[in-house]
Structures are given as C-alpha cells and as structure tokens.
Image 1 (cartoon, rainbow, N blue to C red):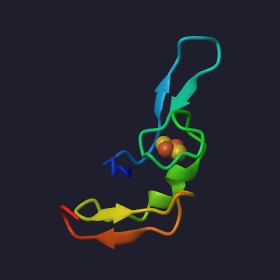
Image 2: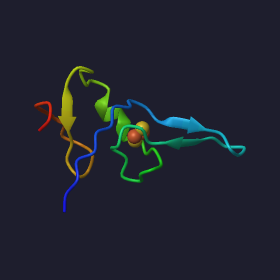
Image 3: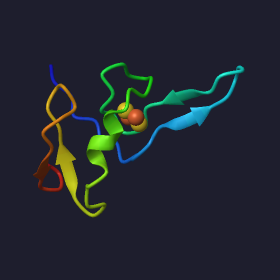
Length: 68
Ligand code: FES
C-alpha cells in the first residue's frame, strides 16, 4: 500500500510545553517525523501555486500536476 499526503507548511510548528521548545514538522519532509529535522529548508524555493513530490529521503522535488 502507498499513500500520498499533502503538506503545505514551509517551516515547523513551535510548541513550548517545557523549558526547551519542540519543533513539530509541518512540511512532511522530516526523516524524524513528527519532529522537525531541518529538511523543510529544501522546500524554500517552492512556488506556492504548484504541487511537488519528494523522494523517500525528502529530497529531489519534482513538480506534479494537480491531482496527480
Ligand atoms: S518543518 Fe518539516 S523538517 Fe522542518
């Protein structure tokens, strides 16, 4: 079974339940999901009107047609 999940966040969600904040991945590219690992930097050049697909390592984005 495979699953495509659409994320449109460009940076993590910061929560501060303790002394140190926790950054939760909102881009879907983290290899340590749900914790941000910095992979969101790879989507900084995305056009917000387009849809992209990344490989299993959260790299090599390619633009896909809407609904693909
Ligand atoms: S927000 Fe996804 S890796 Fe940082």
